[in-house]
Length: 276
Length: 208
Image (cartoon, rainbow over all chains, first blue to last red; front, side):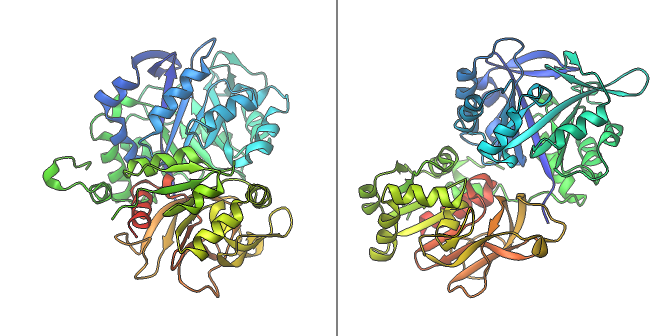
């Protein structure tokens, strides 16, 4: 039986990692900052997968993003998905050569250019993660938003989700713009937008503030993975603790023993370099 | 004793970045090569791979890497670790895009998961899943008998009738998750994507 997954999402904007709240971005620091102040290499041993998204508004520097991705993924031994504005096979290939195992697409999903099919045929369907941003309207309905949440799509969110999942993508990353960065917990009602029989795994995103939110999301049978992009809600040992409490409460996450890194790296306790 | 002269075989289809990353983390300086002569001089070989069996075998043949690998492993007793498609290529034959002979280091065929054997499970088999190993295994040394590893694949080998030690994973059918016999080692999963479990397994291979 496949395990459920805990995913961390890092947002990148013009050389800086950022926090997002309702899709408004706030700078936190560059890669050095992330390593020094946040000890990302250590955090990465508490997750099952990493997503890195270039959410730069306007012109993106793909080369610089790929360099950051390479540096970031050096100490990271989990599957890695990367994306942001991907519209060509070359762009996707550049990400895959920089440490990514999967490519995340968003706005291109709605453009009907045949690009998604082309991506799947070039790299395999499992390589394509469809990221969809939805927003709840005052009347309680949902709208699918493209272009970093900037453009509402005409039509029913249910139909869009069904259309996207039937396009030959490998996974669906479903994010709530309403909850994004608020720490109020997932929008569980958003899951009712999914078709009754979902042919691909679903990653739930948007709104996590603490480990009980992660637990609520992952307990839903429709959810294969829960994601959080909130760096500051899981400072220090936050993510490690959250993972431990999920496993202790019976969530079927993969298990490994980070203390074994000491053996793996021939590091004695006296060396003082314990990871855990 | 860690083996620093590890040669990663580049035939244009591997996720070389991730494998190289993991080896460097473990203190190795891998040589990445598509040159059969370098393979002849290697202490240990690593055959990674993502993609189609037929394309990969064609590529290995065109570059004469296939002969160099078999000669190094069977002729000179060098150890090899095949990962994912790399493991499948070590089989006798693969059924992806037609029937194609493999390197013949693991005497079994590689077939697609059939709906009959996996029931309601989906193809590809993708994600972390539990692997059960046999006592005394080299690769799984210091790991629990059941440990989680990351898989991405649609084709599989079966453990029946093989010499050596096997590890299995249950996806409706118990398929071959890892294999070891003398100097031949292979994993269907990606140790380089399997956190501390995978790093320990790679370390075990290198230290062998």
